Length: 106
Image 1 (spheres, one colour):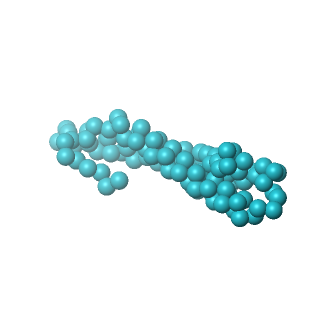
Image 2: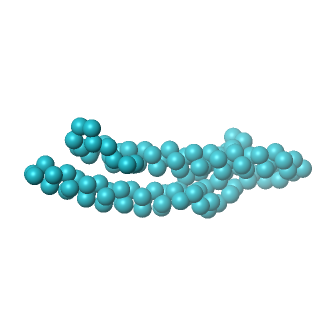
Image 3: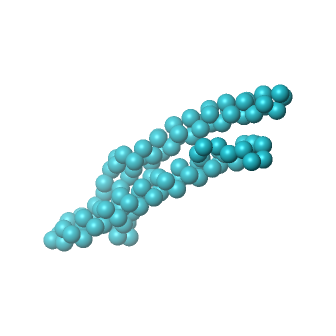
């Protein structure tokens, strides 16, 4: 029973740590870029776009290129949010000592 009590304490600690990590992720901001930094999109961990920056030189006639660069910058920001979220969550899980064969649903 002592092992079960320990496991329950670890599970409670894991739940608290996960909640804290999720709150940190929601507050974080990353910037995706395209066109060598000519288009930048700042996004939160909740995938909300906070800011779009476009170099004035791109505001010319080539609307299609600007649209492509904007889409690429958004996609880059999404990838960065996912990568940063995964790193933060895996770092939190590294200290957890579960019995052999025990798997969590996430």
